Length: 132
Image (cartoon, rainbow, N blue to C red; front, side):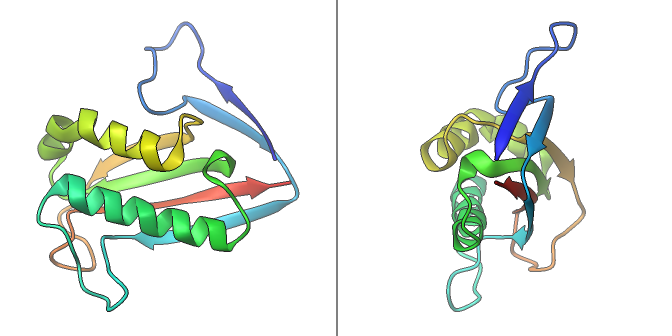
């Protein structure tokens, strides 16, 4: 995949995301929503950062299983049950993202939701990638 990350100078400078990603490739990988589920299907992590790390780890595991890398991500949506808590933890969540996925940021959105499928889940991530 070739990905051109576009961040126009007339928009607010992005922090931890790209305003637009132009992806060229031949295969699309659609990633299901991932929460902080362990192998036994139990939500793990008592804090938002711990759940975010596990959910991102799960998303990246699905991505890699499809033959892709974090740099192939074109779009990720984050669903959070408490946007105020997400904003408070944003610097730590950014460090987790960079450690696990690097700095080739996809186009992203964070959306507050009333609850997620797993009642104990605080965050869920989904997205899609473009492969060569």
